[in-house]
Length: 525
Picture (cartoon, one colour):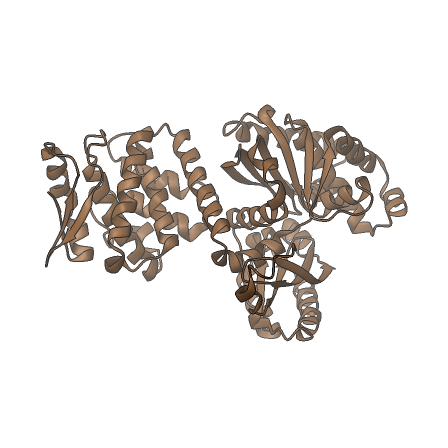
């Protein structure tokens, strides 16, 4: 954490830094971090703890968490609770997340309930796209002084876990896509156990097939030979960085491509006993590191990357940073930019009308800002409207007729960086209702939303319908609007003096939801 000038931050320094803690219940271990965060989001690690866990092996072999796995988890969390008491932190104060093993466990709900009743910790399962979001936050923080690593060239960010491999692709700093792949060290280990082949031979065959398929999908978003920076996250990557950069590194390490490939091959060629003896590792660490480094090496070889960046961070730092991201406008703006970039990338995949979508987006945001008093929504909902406006017509890729329904399906079954499942469900419903009938009791995807989310959909869809009507001709004629309210009308006055007959006709057809939701009749002057 860098020091700041006392004379410039006199008021900020009077604010006592707050203690935060996060626990990750992962596939291979349960890990704790305690840190001090100030109002500017500066983070100082105070303590770490980690215990190996059998959860991933339970879930990926049996489909659910065993009784022994539950008892083990409760015991570990109990020991963490005692450690946290020394910092004056209680279970209710702690962010606890579960990743891929808990996402897939058939008995995850009863597991979470038992953990809560016996430890007091509230476990929240994060979706794969949110996991990517948290990892990106941590990477961004670690590389904050060297953001050129991500902005000057195309980059891939990769994290290999026990159950999944998380991948993000950036095109000169802009998020292109993020994916969660069913490739993990524990999954691979189980496949090896079931195979009659030699482990080394099987690993190459199994991974070559799976990674090639995954990379073919990734290449649709960004040619992998254009990737010049390869960012690796995870304990196996940090192990390589410790070994190759003098056993120690601060915020991040920069490794040569060939250097990393040679090291990964060297570890993979050793027996577990040799690896344990040479690097002073436990059995599970040696097993996991060898598999993880092999996966990372094979992804690296599919790219044109010259360097490997290893940030000294984990998802737990991302959890803590997410708690204070609202305090740092730069972080907030950067995340919004990446969400919007991811939405644009999805839209381009379906050959959208970029000029029309951009104009409707701008009109939607103008209307949203002018209606703050009426809708009472915040920055997050504004971002969801921006995403929905970009994507509102992508259903035309399948068919023009009923494209609002096709668009809903595409969005609901896509990943947008930075948006969790509820966000995507809201956006997909807004896309559905940007035209034609309003929500009905027979519309399952709308009714399935929580009441608060349904209200958000109504407000955002009402605004989007008006914005879309104002660009009925797809020519961007309506610009520089000024707004005025009368008792029951919302007047929109463009700066141009043109014939807006087509836009007025469209507004008359699509303005009904706006009037129902806000109690104002939208009128184009």
